Image (tube, rainbow over all chains, first blue to last red; front, top):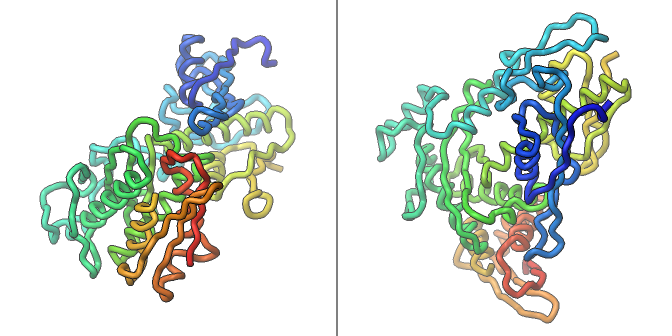
Length: 317
Length: 75
């Protein structure tokens, strides 16, 4: 059934790059195509062993374009996944974006840095009042680190803005000691709306040629985040959730996983056979599970041990 | 890269003065020997060597003009 549709295969430096090229060739919006990642590509070392990322874009079947079922709150789908019921199914409540408040919130938090869309909690406001740099709303507090924020580290419980400064300085230090030039920004995102407790500290690294900081399957980024967490929590003597990101890589990965989930679910519905995805770390499996949580026809289970644990999608009985 | 190891180790230990990193240039690899106070060993190694392995990952991703492998040993 693929043959009748317009389809194009493109390659690029990154998956995102390849997708953009393909969209240009087809003259379509992202929401009008199904994206299939053929190869994620590899950066290689000093230009050796580099492989381009390859993707296949296929024009979506329906006129309104969205795949038969798309995870709610996909940011760039023009119509937020108005659920078109496949003919074969019995009636089930359609999934609406409102069903997944936590995903919506985390997206907003990630995407819109400067807009204090997440309300500042009373506790945060109180903490803010005790700091030496008042008046900045916590959410919008971004510290740029070209000038060094020096020893604000107090041994007893640090405030959020101190943690922000320490985190920024730590990451800046790590990245430049690794030999890279990059800009580091940190901001605090309140999690209160998503039902999780506490605040997260997001540290964004931006710059040119930072793919090595992400590494194969995000390995380097994971190590960077792990070490940053240890150092910051050691210095502030308290536990803060810290997320380190390079050039929005985590957000891109979330989008990728969401569309992967939607495509795999479509395939399960079409073929009736279970589909196993590649082995993934826990946080990525979680995204898949969440993406298909409210799907009317499929269910997800994780199978396997350790590094070989993968999500299997199968039809609901 | 020596500075990277020193920075991470100093930031994690209690006794920062005892941290020392020796760089040994062998034909096959750059070997870094990290010395810390005995009571801080656990801090730089971590559960099942998690911290040590994370430092190794960062070393591998560091800009390395020699093109040699890097080895981290904690002694």
